Each structure stands twice: as C-alpha cells, then as structure tokens.
Amino acid sequence: MNVPTINAVACLVMFAAMRSASAACEIDDPAVVAKAFYDKHPNFSSEDPARIRKIVTPRFFDALDREYKCAQGQICAIEADPWTDAQDGSIGKPVEFATASNSGVEAKVSMTYTFVLGKKHEQKHATLVLQREAPTECWRMDDLMGPRGDSLVRGIEQWFKEYGSAL
Image (cartoon, rainbow, N blue to C red; front, side, top):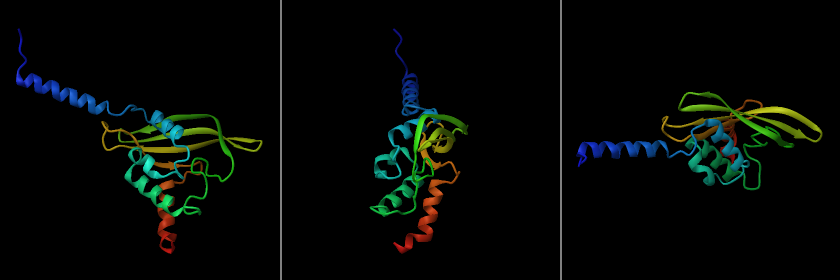
C-alpha cells in the first residue's frame, strides 16, 4: 500500500486551491461577461450601485455612487442613457457582443445594436471596458463608452469636478 508523503499531500492541496481560485469566476470570456452585465443591469446608471459593487471596479463604483446620491429626483452628470447616448429611443434586437481587445487584465468589448427611434432604425456601437487585477481574477466592469466614444466614468468625474461643489 502506497501512503502519500506530506509533500505529495501538500502538492495536492495547493493544486486544488489553485484550481478552485481559477474556477471562482464562472465566466472568463470578456464578451460573455459584458453581455451578462447588460442583460442583468440594463439600468445600472440609475439603480443603487450597491447592487453591482462586486462586479464593477472601485473607480466605476465611486462614480456611479456619487451620481446616484446626487440624482435623487434630479439630473446630475448623466443626462442620457449611457448605452445609447440618447434621451429618447431604445435598443432593439439583436444585441451582439464581441471582444475587441484583451490583454489579460484589460479587455474592451464592442456592443453592436439597432437603435430604434420611432420608425428610424440605426446600427450603433458602445464599448464596455473590463478590468481585473490578474489573469486569475474575475472580470469587472470599469467603464462604458457610448456611441460617441465618451467615457462614462470620466464624464461623471468631470461633472462633479466642475459642478459638484455647488451641490
């Protein structure tokens, strides 16, 4: 009968721990993560950011939290739907997600959709930026750039820099 040595047991325990750490994220594909974020939180910019705190970066959370606290019944930094950069209209189907770049710790995902405003249907693109601390960590939303290409986080930060002290 072979009895495992302490070194062999230690190696097995370490292997199991590393495997479970890398399996902690259900999904490693940035496009799938971005789609899940869109599907589960289409109104993220107006909902309590505490609901998404664990799936967004601290900088993104801080910007959304400031906006949420300010916007109780009024318009603050976000004046339009961040997905569309528009106040009117909606996102029609299909909505498609494709990874545009992936360095292992930052990924950009292109979101392509049909923008519907009355009888007008137009193809639009938004870019979701995801980050993680290391390739073994889970992807987190870091920013959204609507069809105009403007950073949502930078826009919120700039607005509060310019107008936030007046509140």
